Length: 281
Image (cartoon, rainbow, N blue to C red; front, side, top):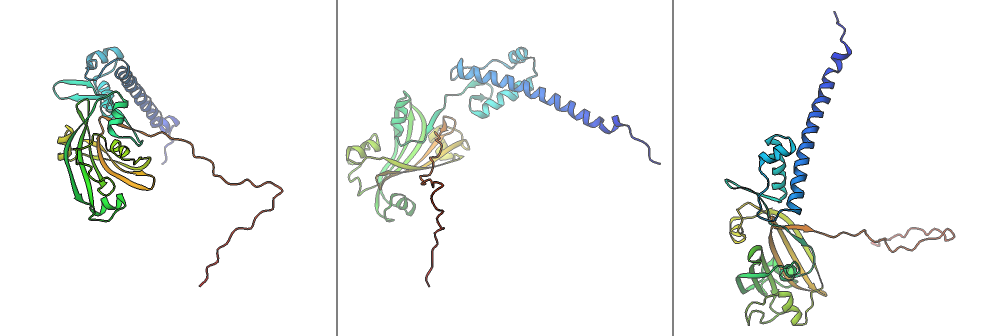
């Protein structure tokens, strides 16, 4: 025997689901309110190293649970706006430097931001070009190149690790008077004007060796940038840099693509037959 089922029974679960969704939606809105308040506080009122309001104060101010407050704080820690230190509390993270993809030296970029650049030279030597370095500089493997390995600092804080290679034939005696403060500046002094380049950017985790140089824990996220710098048609510098992701944010200006320079055909012009290519055996 088939018993009739009421409409309420058929749709009761649906009503419950909508109710559950409403509760979830309210919870998300509470978390977003706390998160956005903290983000505004961090970016407009507090300074790097300042502590944020306590969980108790935020719970009272917004009428939410500690779990909601922690969710909002966790989101800003992931974004890099806050630093959480076990046993000490949660603090405003140092301001990130925008890593604009432009042809400028590290020193020029830091000075443009009002920061004092400096370097720790790890090695400066003449070596034989490995196949990958030779390919990047358009020279033959085994040819002599200047190799420069440095930690780059801003206001005394490690920001990046940089390795650069230049052909010894292009810039003979590069290290004769010591390591130049600026590779680009030294090239310009010799009449070689870097005017364009190409970058390859990737994200990865830092290994133990580089982590020690950068002063961050091993496994922390970093940005890897490989750059070929050209003066006209000459590849003059090849570099590989590792940037602290907690101090940099990649900034890339975009422009709308230009319209192709194709002549417009008027209505009075006859339609051209498509071009064909004949292959002769």
